[in-house]
Image (cartoon, rainbow, N blue to C red):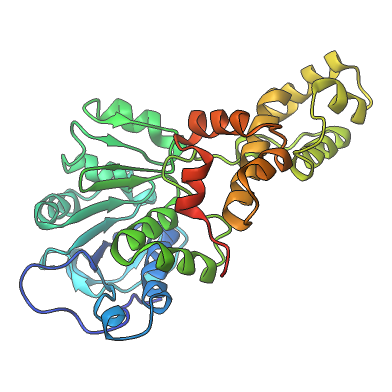
Length: 342
């Protein structure tokens, strides 16, 4: 597998200070392939999502990849990537993108040094997943807020106490530095960068073209309801989980759910928490929030209709849930992320 060695969508711009659309991706042995290809595919699709014409083509992304020595690297999955350039001589980019992977556990000091050297002249410095460790090793996250894959947040905070590590959001921006959570969160961050560069419509079109189910805001928690919770072992409890997801508007009280599982409310609450890892109430809250997000993004239903369909009952109850979890009221969430085709 080789990287894009030519501009994505058009020739590079004039010499001199590089625009943010010039992206340099750092490669190394043990890099996570999706951390690289996810954002690159977003940038490659962005020019096609823009309105046709010279203006769109001139805004195209130029993606370069670089590794020490310019030789091929092996990803954590064993794929072979051939970089475009030697990282030692790569010119400062507009956007410096540092992916994660097992190769970040014991990073090459020279790779870290080159990241530190390239960062000051970059317009943006971005990490995906455990790429945040390389930024931190380079001294770039000192005094900054950052995130990484949820499983490594405690380690990042412990090793770099000068960094404010937030384990909740899927990506965090602090000035020109942006860090994202595990693997596919790099796609979300790349979409946010496309929105900055080319506008909201282009970012939404890219999301649709890549069949990204939801274009998530950075403040969204790293876990969805299904990812955050375990799948219950017992069939009746698994059926209750499915019912909650498919019927957020229904009566989802403990009594009602317990009746569906043919258990007493006390037995049900105890078994659900033991097997799923969260209380029934917490699981229902997450499922309803996800249902409301999808309706706001994918339908033209009014706020009151969405609140009823997602099981909130009133728009005010839904507003409180959105502000508490996403730091956005529903109307603002829809304004930013509505993706209904015209």
